[in-house]
Image (cartoon, rainbow, N blue to C red; front, side, top):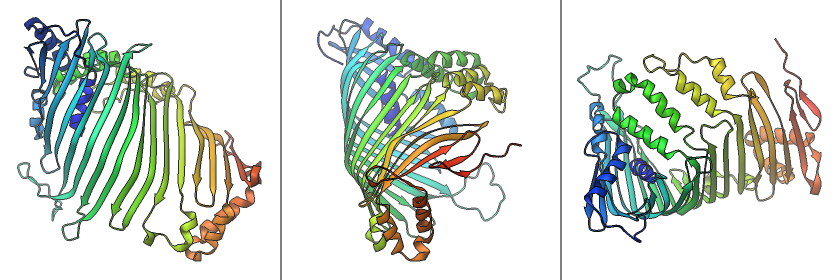
Length: 499
């Protein structure tokens, strides 16, 4: 998965229509080879372009780039990627592929991976934009198998000779299969530079099986996961494809730690040119009918929605995460009869962090690192770093309206807060609830040793509540900058004493 994703990411900055194709020529092949070779440095044998009628055959072979990994005793077999390109005559190129991919990756004694997929795609790549203006594709029979190893424990604490490798045993095996994955993407020049790309994706027939071998004498623990599929979108604004590809080419041209260290001033320039990497990035996905098998039974979720949004290295830094789950089911043997009414049926959480400056932080890090030092960032002043990263001295957090719902109860919440290294956290929250009497009834019917403490806490919370609309119980919580906390105006703790 990681190999295919990485190679696709490289190609995503490069194609795909067949209309008005210009006949292929040796000069055109030479031009294309120069363009794509520029993304991979001066390593020979990576890019091959040959004319074929009205098309060009493009082959990208990453093996020469990765050959340096052999020094670290990493073994790999990766496929060459092949594409067919046509010149549309207007600065854009049509690109298609229809190929089978198989790969293997091994770190002896630690990790093994094998994979296979059939990939088909088509699109239009804009040479000036260095990105796709449209693309769609499908991958079928995507299968990945992983094996993780751990060394056998030694009978003594004496170190093994350098030429003697420890024996290993299998710790886990993992098999993943996706029957079909498809995507469609468009791209345009970003208003503030870079490329704006919007992608929709869909996957079907998801399955995974995992085996964990805790020790050599015990039976393995088996887990499994299945789902009919998931779908979602991925959007990125202002992706600095030119800077990112230039940075990639620089690392390809400097494949060793020694070369990177001796050229760190050049690296500063490459990193600076690639910033802020992107302006904004967001991804959302919805997974349905998830089933998880385990040694203690089958768990399930009818639906799970997830969203992640984050800025690049810009001054107005922000991070948002949102998750909603519904239709939770757990094995009957794990749920006592009295706990049935307490089982959540739906939960939603949406929070955002903002107020940090990643542009200033990245600038300090780029200007201040020294790869010749034992700690490359030891010259950075911690106070200066903190002041640059947190211009207001704190991070602002906001919890959008969320909820936790069961069959007979509902708890709603929202709030905001501020926290930083040199100040007490402060903020406010509002919690409202209905149906807590049903929750208390369930806890009252439970054995005291199971529910005694939760029951006591619930009764204390109800005693602090104020009546709201429609019979709701409401808690207005305030945390003052000085450290005092109040609930519905009642002070629960005073200010923190100052030294």
